[in-house]
Length: 156
Image (spheres, rainbow, N blue to C red):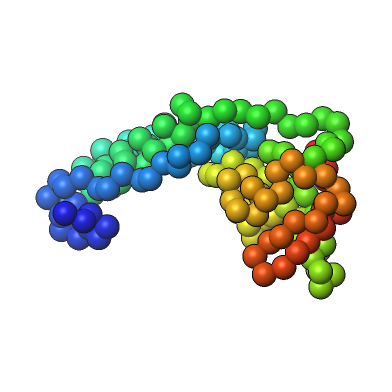
């Protein structure tokens, strides 16, 4: 039976929520990403206590599911320390500035999957764009969806 859609009445009856999917990629994290994971676990532990006191079974089910996910992410995290020297190639944790053929510049840092926020310039290292950039150097041109771009700067 497909559990993609769960009615709230089913939750109230004690049915289990579907598990949050866990990525198949290694769980590389920056120090900031590790702090975010730990903060999420602490927040959920606090929410669990509030839900217990309120005897809120749907909230307890949601929090338990989310705690399993974040505890798994914390346990599987591989902390990657930041580069301290100017890198000569794109790698996890570096900031990359690219210039597209139309002259537009974009800059982003390659981070862990849970830390990614493209609107804030944080791109998952496992994304297609990051995969195309890994190991490349300044001056290299890469093909991106719909255009080509040149790597103009790599920073720690």
